[in-house]
Image 1: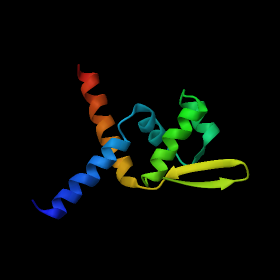
Image 2: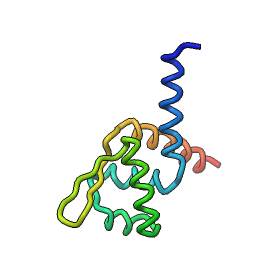
Image 3: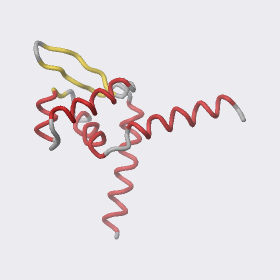
Image 4: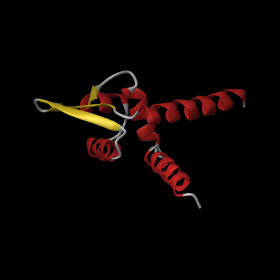
Length: 101
């Protein structure tokens, strides 16, 4: 096996693993509109604050999100556009297929 090809598939699998929950896809969708603080994300996505924090931490540690602190608030933004491309492509395809059926 080719080590470079293995690395490509490994990185792709890691990205898919991080994007494997609907909540994380919704977070990406919200952040495509621009930077948001945790409260704004909670208002748009119906999960508990601890659950939201867990998802944001996983996405931050994977490099998909960036963050900055402003006073007591933490703001998140998209840091890796690959995640946006994958999310948009898949969600658009699923929406199209759902509309047809």
